[in-house]
Each structure stands twice: as structure tokens, then as C-alpha cells.
Length: 390
Image (cartoon, rainbow, N blue to C red; front, side, top):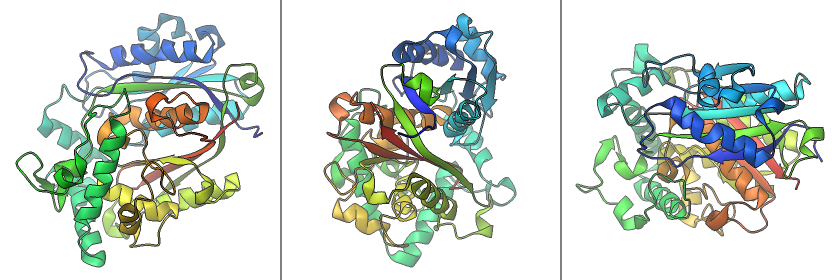
């Protein structure tokens, strides 16, 4: 058994257009619930890390202190706010794991949250563009979807029109999302709808259709992590067998935009640290902010050679029952993408599978899982390898 820190409890709100008025309310949904699930109290917590992107979604800052506002028992606990674009949640988790594994504490609470739907569509697009390199990329049409529209167009130029394969990815994730009670959109659209441009599924940017783009959502998720000794005294243990962060250039002009080299290095490093190959994993939760991202991530994780990720989609290798099921939760595409909550949510979804607590989503016999979360257009890449202990 690994001596690394472990996940010992979690909580997850529904994702979608929620009645919660603000991030504090969303945090309040999950912080105490995660402690209850782990079987610990606020007095046991040595650190709270908080992932909230914000950057204009709310006038309220000082997000770390909102945990104590939402759950007064946690107000005396040291708390810190992390932000790393769409990888904000994973940044918060990694900071908590660093704290635990350094020996500075035994239990940490990780909370990720975002309130996005109270902001207009135009404002959302402008806020999200803060995750691109504004001097060169801020003028792109359709906000961040325009960035990935350019990536998709570039991929198609080199490797052929792969719109059908993107639709296969979208259809797969929506089919999976039907089984996820937390998902923003629990509707199976099917391949034909996802592959057809229509009034209900228009082109958004470049070759990307609406069904190729993740949802603007509200939501929150939380994890309790503990050192190995403490985890052994609690009801469940999902070990963090390995974790790696890798970065790449922020400006797309300084790298091959369809290579996702940072993602590849993160996957390679995490699998090597875990002593595993990609085929040893039972499932993966990956960052499908856009379907083209998931397709290129197949290449980054080693399921396909560069330029051949579309073959993985066409062969059905990442469907439930395939070679490596990807996004059994529905992914960002169906589950939703409240920025600060996403990385935490992905780890909750994987941990639920490994603990046998995934309900209708459950994959029988799941023992090892990979999680990939990225900030920006594959700028900050995080990979975790999770292992069921008990």
C-alpha cells in the first residue's frame, strides 16, 4: 500500500443553474457534508484549501475565508485560496496533498466551487478569456470556444475532418451523464443529433458545434484527504498513488497547439511514478471542456499515436465496456464545468468508482483510475493516479 496521502471522504452538489445566490452558499453545500462522509469533524481539520476561479464572476474575493463563513466551525482553521484557470480544483487538491505529505498536518479539506450562471453569456466569455494569452488571443471570436475552435481547425487541417469522431465523443459523454445524478444535463442526445448542424445544435466556433462545448454551470465539490496512518482508521481509503503537474507555454504561438505536450509529460510522469501503463487503468476522468480536447488527450495519455486520437473514438475504446472507459460521469460535457469545482469533482467521481459508491455509474471491479485536469489550452496539466485500498 502506498504511504502517500489518501482521499477518505467527499461531497458533491448538483451541477447546473442553481438557486444558490453565491459561492459561499455553494461551499456550504459540500464542506460539512464531506467531513461527515469521512467521519471526521471540523476540529480534526488542519488545513482548508479552496479552489475558486472567479476573475469577475463575483465581486466577493478572499474565497478561502468563505469556508469559515459558510461553516462557522471551520473559521479557525488555516485556509488558503488557489487559482490555476480551469485546473483550479486540482491546484487546491495538490496544495492539500503537499501539506499532508510534508508532515505538517494529518487531515485537510479541499473545496472547489464556482457560481457562473448569474453572469451574462457575453461576460462569461470575456472572463474565461483571462485564461488565454490576451496580447495575441483575446480578439478571437466566441471567447474561449474560439481558442479551441482554432485548435480543432488546425487538427482537421493536418489529420482530416474529424467532426464525426467529435460527435461520437459528445454522444458518449451525454449517454454516460444520464446515469450521473449530479450532472447538469442528463440527456442522451445520440450520435446523429451531435453530428448534425441544426438550429438546436449550431456552429459555435470553427468546426465546433454546441454539442462539442461544455456547459456553463454552478456547483461545488469537496474532498477530505488524510495521511496514510489516519486514513487506516477511517471507513474508506482511496490512495493517491501518483500525481504530476506539467506546464507549457501560455501563448499558443510558441508551441504546437495540437500536441498537448504538457499533458503528455504529466501522463508519462504520473504513470511512471505509479509503475503502471495506461492499459492498467480501469477508468479515466478527463478534461473534455471541448470534444477536441478529449480527442487530443487520448493521444497525450498514450491511447493513440499523435494525430490518431480520432481512431480511439471511432473504435469505441473509451465507451463503457471498452478498452478504457473515459468520463463515466459524463465529463464536463454532460456533468458541467463550474471552473473552480471541476478538478475536485473529477477526483470525487473517480474516488466514488474506486470505493464502489458510484451508484448507477458504477464500473464493476474498478481498482485504478486516472484523472486529468488542465488549465487553459493545455497550459497547466495535472494527472493523478488513484488506487482503491479499502
